[in-house]
Image (cartoon, rainbow, N blue to C red):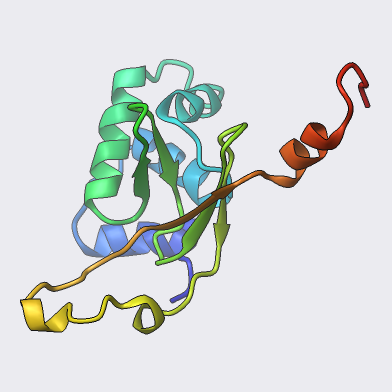
Length: 151
């Protein structure tokens, strides 16, 4: 499945009768055009440059609505933080254990990771979340440098 762009997503939402406020459109555009996985606070900071009066509460409410509509994904982590992903397709993530960066990577087809016996249990799999943890290139390089040496 191909990632939907901003215009395609807007058309789909309009076709389904979703009200598209300027705030929703700006937040959606930001998430669809970035490959980062920003927090709500980062979305607020980026969008408030264009929409000076947007509140953090509006950003949180909009992110919740867009997640519920299935056009973005919320990635929750154990520390209570969430990051938001404008790529609504099934894919995996590389998560850096040092800096917390999250990178999209293509994942194997669901048939390749389907749990054996899932069909016999009557459980219907609708989605999955696959993450690989390690160090991003920048953190790996920094870790290999001797202490006190700066690049």
